[in-house]
Length: 479
View (tube, rainbow, N blue to C red):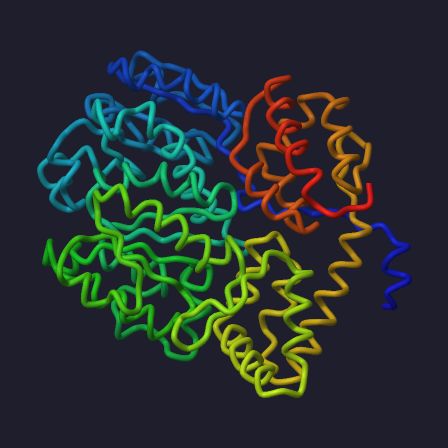
């Protein structure tokens, strides 16, 4: 298709929505006032959910919803409720335990289930206390985690982008989830597994290493969807509760999925042995969280596309596909420097770094087209340039519709936000549609700032418009 015909045609904008099924109902059955008070936190921060407080086990067990729901209970409540009935009555239900029991906070699942059998009834287990795991701090990530689990396990027919966490102690990941979700927003899911066997099954679809098929492994399990592995060193393997299974898991990933960036969450000396090839996040060290955000942005495709030399020095930072095209122009020249640049791009292509970056910046269709290609040299440059240029022209003719009115640039978007029904805007904001469209239009920084914004009514409108007004003069655009 010629460029002129692409410009004339209007293309529909199809946002990338990672979770097609949304948790719409949150049911809380708990005598703990801290947990009950999270109703008001959720109503403010996740306005698309309906929160119901239940006061007796019969009502909890008999609760029925036509939409996806999560049932959140404390230790006493979980003991009293027949969760099998909940699952039978609700097609899409996730049962979550918010535990105040120190044994559960610090124990792998087998130990907790042996001493406190009721814990086996929960799909997810989180720790809560009055300080670092206060219910009000973690409740959003608890609900989001339930939604991620539901979509990954039951609705996996779409390509996913998953942060896989391997850790057996609820105390740590209960603290960590709010931080991680604050970084990734709606761009990826988070999955927690707590044993080596669970990790193998999730990644490769097998129960033991010897069952991994060296030729077909990519088609089994969810390994191909994982964009980052965050793992401890010590967690259960077979009958050993505190094995150093993390070392074996890291080597497996480096062998089968070398494209997956690895973060070791540990302060052990065993973790330090990997520091040349992975990012080591010392557990409990607040200063490391700033570095963590930068690492995730730089190495999982969520931030700039980095082109580095063999020693790790950053040669180029690419913010959008227009900048990528300029780099490809440099790489297409007949010079020694261009040849080295092509070699680096070839390596990134082999490791699926380019397609992953496109996926994370909402170019799902383009990522699907380019990912299977294994071309090199000048042919690679020509193919990438062709597809990226077509996408630039396509996005120039891809408006965003709000209540049947369209915006083609930032000034039009700003106007529509001010005059449209806040209810129509809320659904677009909740599903990250604004950020996806802006990302594809090349407004990467603006998209990043809008991602965490949720709310209702004029408060939401004010938040969105004030940020767009701040950025509108920064970008060069025909208004």
